[in-house]
Image 1 (tube, rainbow, N blue to C red):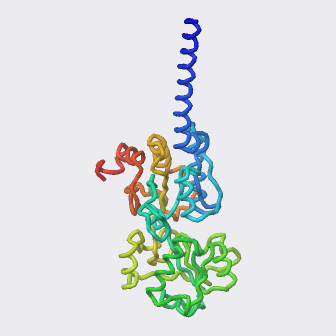
Image 2: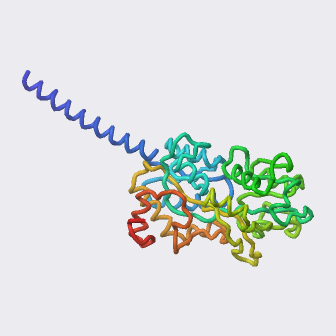
Image 3: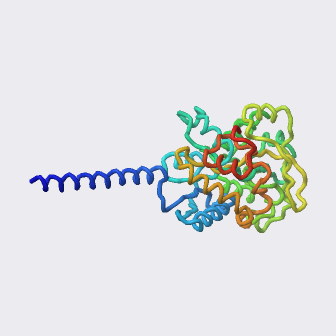
Length: 332
């Protein structure tokens, strides 16, 4: 009987140890979402998709995860929810959405969201493009005409419409279409709107892209966004926007446009070692990544990858950047 009791006791200890190990594994699985798939959420076209494809290949080659570049076309705030709910691990988003979520802007969020930055990507350039015959040569000229901007559930669309109001442009005196970029471009090509204002990249280079097939670039004009009093007031409210020369390459005219940083973000609960590895992969394979995206993006800013990032960095990303000498001190 005594021997039988000892056997039962030992069996209990073994079972307990397996249970504890199982719980630990489950918690690790929960914290990462999956140790098999490291998901990159991106748009189904464009620079986010191509950069996501490059990063997912690097992740897979690095072993430990299978990098998957999702092609779901969803709005930025939904990407953030997927991070928080552990349905995705990394999202490429823009400065406004990241900042408003991080600080818990009451218009969009009930509380501050636990997201952190991994690294800066490239500037999102909100190109204001008009038909030449529309007579639009500055923002004020849009009044009384028609414009397409991001959809009703888009933060960027809300902020651009808010900016138009500084110039006295609103839905009572101007046709403002809040629709997705692809539809807005189609309407523009069909001359159903006089102008569009989307994150389209660097101006005239974009006009020569496949989106404007069977068309002539001289039919359109890149409208400058001048640093006037209205813009300055807008930037005081939303300092993660800035004005910068759109001249990047290939003879584009120097013209100021509204820009904001793009940034890779993750959940604050992402394990530090995983974030460290992903950040390291990104910065140590810049040449590989740049093969996937247009050179007009200015993809990698090797001098200061913190430029414009409007939220705090994840501690894993900070650890890599400190070790690599990308930031001067741990007190950043």
